[in-house]
Image (cartoon, rainbow, N blue to C red; front, side, top):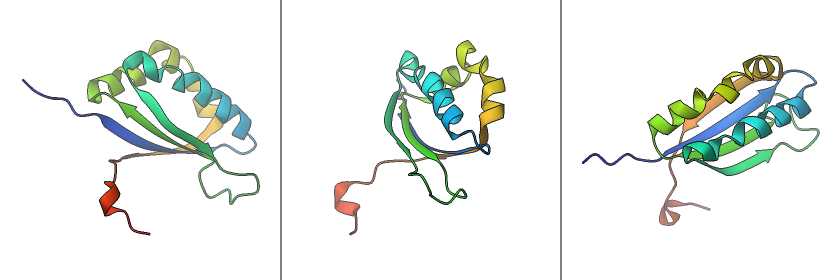
Length: 108
């Protein structure tokens, strides 16, 4: 029997110019689909006003049960139907697979 490992992603998002609010609305819509595939949004934070535009405006940590669940989420028809919105409001997305750092390994 093969045990599938959780997939944890750190997602960094930059909006197109003047579209930070629309990016937030788009992300509200697509992140609502994550639980349908057994996933969880572990963290979602936004940059404070006045931050350097070279930095991401939103950072998310998302956990999915496995790669199959992630692929199904990415192919969800409701998510795919919003591709035109994504293309208008998201200038850049960086996705990094991450893992938890055990508490004993953290440095101050």
